[in-house]
Length: 256
Image 1 (cartoon, rainbow, N blue to C red):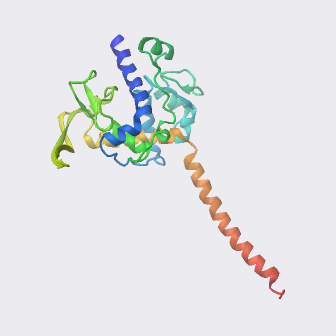
Image 2: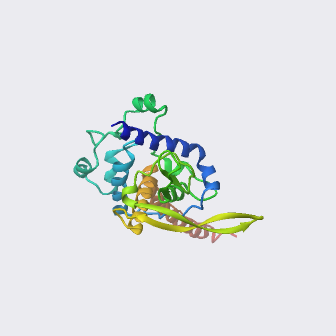
Image 3: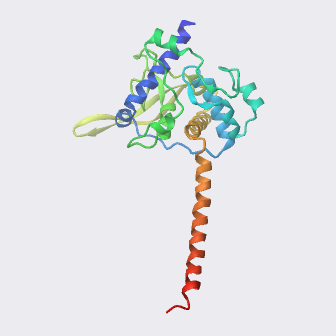
């Protein structure tokens, strides 16, 4: 039990560090990969919600998101109750972490941060917050020199263990060497799979894309509706402008 709690706490405290040093990681780690934008793909969002509930809500809350809001991505209340409602009894409640925040703070000195708007709150020269999360979730590797046995190319010396390692398997980064300003530097060139996971590398990348898309959607569930309404409003204004222009011409045509 204590091992599980320590693992959960490490994950939470790592994201605290990510919040404070996300921009620094962007400049010292590898370049961020472009995250797929699947916020209009209902199947991708449902898969992302499943991953989020099963792997993220153990430590983190999404206190500004209610379970019943998942109806907006095509899930019924019964499906939510049967498949996603583990830390609460009511569909109308917010997504709270399985761990007790007070106990987490007492035991480990810090409360795992809320992830509701994490995809919108982090960005930098390397790209958007979604790009960072997508790269971060896909660049873990074994490192015996760290306390957790894991490290991350997007966030070097990260304290958070790779909680998704059973899906991805274990792999090691491969490097080329080149000269820069008279010094030899390592340049990341790819991955070597050490042990297989339950998913292929392609399936894992797609799943992380779904998870990040869900976190994008969760950060602003009304975004797609807002964009659709905005397009119709602009079309109406353009049409109204044309009508007003022609009416103005008709009203003033006999006045010289």
